[in-house]
Image (cartoon, rainbow, N blue to C red; front, side, top):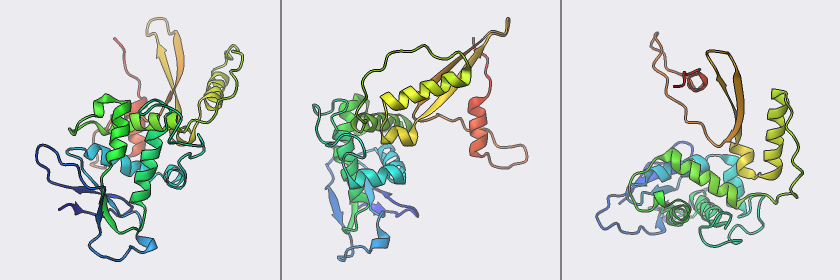
Length: 254
């Protein structure tokens, strides 16, 4: 049996012992109590591990607790983008809508007071695996890499209609104006609910130690791989700001 530990804020993970070959878990497991959960107990449904896929459960829990995205996916397949998230392309193709549909179905199961104790994210895993073959099979993978693929797939599925291609104009020379123009173009030509929530713009600069010449560039990102800074000398724990400072610190290039 799966042991479900209901986390304080929402969906938990149910870990099930499996043998080889891996059995496919049931879509839902009835709750031990025959009565449906009360409205204030929603969000306590767990996730089966499909083999060693705790990385997938971690990513789903993060998205499940991102209220703006979770609420839209649960209420509508389009989430402000395509009118039909289940169509528009071949299975697994970019923009086909299958990842958004599978994610919405799974989140509705996690937040439904239906009495299910745990659900298996089979459809979501299958749709993501069609986008990225790395995630085929049931072995352990990197949660951050999965999250990146999942966000990009949701963005493709939920992309808003693009306006006609504008005439390319030269970017302003002033750094702040150039950054603002690049961001404006990205939001105008390639936006979705996912980019509204998760996307940012990163400024990087390469400076020559000899002559002092500096090249500045800007790029969009979905997530930042922050390093874990060492414990402080006074024994205090590091903060998120410390991790951001470590990420933005200067580093010499070979």
